[in-house]
Image (tube, one colour):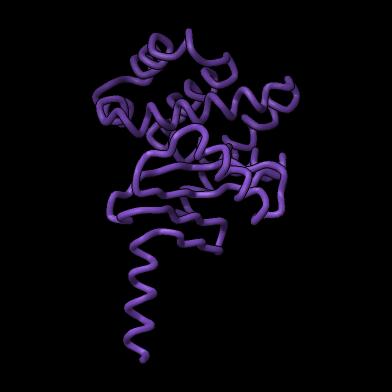
Length: 181
């Protein structure tokens, strides 16, 4: 991933600079999250953009028709630039790097939360407040995922810190305690 990060950083940094100069960074971050979601959920889109059969102009037209109504000109220009430079296949890396730089600039902590079931809005709000307290920050960006193997509860990852409040984790701890006894 370091090579991909090295390739993605200049594009991500340029997008952040454009966003800051136009005071659109927050909107661009929201667009980046939505685009990442669309990109990761559509294998057809990824395949088309990575296809050597589709010309650069064809890719740019496809991007224009797919996204011109839903994203800002700055984000659309990034997509077209990546297509021009034969780098559209690394769109996810560029957007993830952009979000890293954006969070760093804004002092936002990223927390990965995995729960056994989908969390309600109220549960997400409570969890966000708890994570802010644990992280010692006023801004937290939460990446939610569901893993039924947890049986119940959730696991929070803040950098290298892991808070395992899952039933699976408690059963594992109990097993370790019994093994020591």
